[in-house]
Length: 151
Image (cartoon, rainbow, N blue to C red; front, side):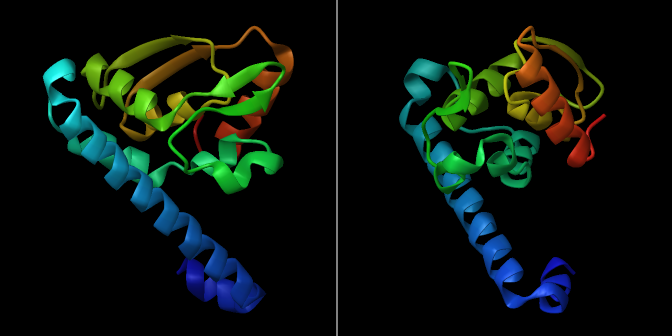
């Protein structure tokens, strides 16, 4: 459907969406491989299916500044402004797995930052209450989350 819409607005939109989807899928595969490699230290050797789905669906590029978008699916933290970063995807994956939460659970997140972690949790059906004390980051995260359909 999205690519059909891409035909209406220009082929570039469809190609860009496919590229982002491919990058996101490659990142998820890398994260799963890294978790298997670190299984002895982590105490688990795979990510929960709902977490894998969330990591594969939540558009990390939407949570980073335009200048960082080309690196959005790299497995390292990126600056989001005001001396803050969006966490490394591996860290988001491991933290979320260690929480052992799922649909219907509630989480309080202190330090919203970009809002990416909140979006991953919300995509898993978790009720997230997130607080950010830096006003600019709070506004930006709230706008991004709203645009993506998270309330």
